[in-house]
Amino acid sequence: MQADLSLALTTTNHKKMKTKQLLIVGLLLVFFINANAQFKIDAQFRTRGQALHGYKKPISSETDAAFHVGQRTRLNFRYNAEKFSTLISIQDIRTWGDADNVVGTGVLGKSYNNLDIYEAWVNYKFNEISNIRIGRQEMKYDDQRHISWRNWWDSGLAYDAVTFTHNNHETGWRWDLSASYNSRDSFRELTGNDYSGVTDYFGKFNPIQTQSFFYLKKNIKNKMYISFTAIATGYQKEGTKNTIYITGTEGLHFNYNTNTINVGSPNMKVTDGFFAVANAFIQNGSNIQGKKIEANMFTAQFGYRAMEKKLEVSTKMERLSGHDTKNTDADYNNTAHTYNLLYGARHPYYGGFLDWFVVPKSTGNGGLFSLGLSLKYNLTSKDIIWLDYNYISTVENAKSIIKSDDEPIFYYDGNLANTIDLTYIRKVVKNVKWMTGFSYGMPSDGYNKLWGINKGGTNYVFYTMIIFTPKFFDSSKFQKITK
Image 1 (cartoon, rainbow, N blue to C red):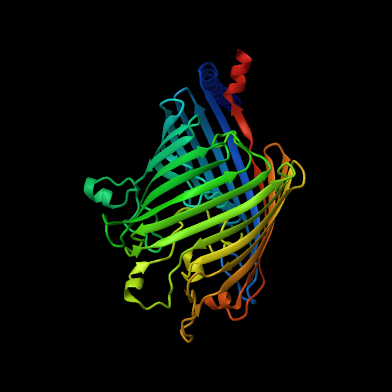
Image 2: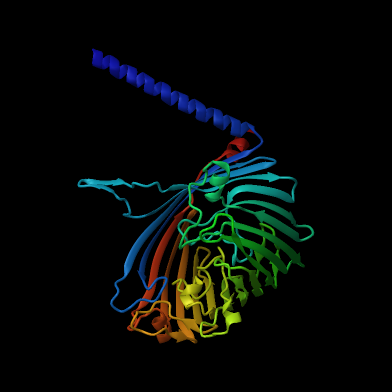
């Protein structure tokens, strides 16, 4: 009898709790439905499996392939009203099988937390053409050479910043001003408060402490736009609390399409015809070690779209300045000539999807010159296939990246590698996309030797990735019903 009474009370309490939860959810729904605002919940599930044999650097013949499955899970809460909009994006990044809390009868999970806030910002609209965004936010400008969301990474990349945007579609002018400052341990010393929980200097990996930029863009005759970007990037001096080295990056981006509709607007459409994209940037100020920097970057792509955009053919060129490691002139060596890509996109550029040349060290600081050919074809409305070829060489004399104690330093100036990338994308159903690809690298003998490899192996990467983006809730649908 007592057991039955206890069970009844438990059941009653459970029902009351469930009723309260439903009531709270109901009140929230009523608020969002009746308010002149929109509330959305959506997600992204992205899983990518890879077979890696020579990823990031060439591989020796005796090295086995590595296999990896990574997963990104994001849950997004979006709110949009007349003047305000917000986004909170919760993210979990994991590698399958990386749990370290294990017992003999099963895997219990991790001893550390995978969850993080990927984005968390508030946006305020002053009017139809001006707004300010405050908080952790994705950033993508032009072809993302310097400011990018780095989406190929499972973790992606967001910036803690304040960004003001003025975008007038009628005149074609847009300008953005953004500023950020990432506090370090010196904040605790000065104020007695510790909000960051990190040390002054990050040792081997010294991240950007402050990045501010000005972006100016002009659309011209619905066919092209030109933009100017000036970036001030600060790195903290090793072993200090308040000394910051500033790298200046300034340059122009040029984007031309023979036939374009609604240039620069969210509804921009590109039709058949000739297109061209180019960048010209310089760097000055001080680099991460405090050395004076004089570096430059030039890129260009020329192509043609035909058959109602089904076929796209283009040629491309990339040139990143490097440091001549054989030059013994004192004035020359007191200046850094290696170009810094900052937090810009790497994977789509710089010699193929093997990602061999995404950091200056990967060419022995000799810079990079790449010529490529790209062929893209839409097989159907749901199927896309493209082929990329790249020829990569040094700009200056490169120096041994890895060397043994019993070998002299190796200098090299010439061809580094040839790479081929084959990619296939399939829109399976609504909100589901499948992407798979194969990349093959052919390093030169000189590039193998830069890495200290005497007998090179076969270099390839195969990956397959599924992306599912469900929409869980949209208050605007309920608003339509109630009207």
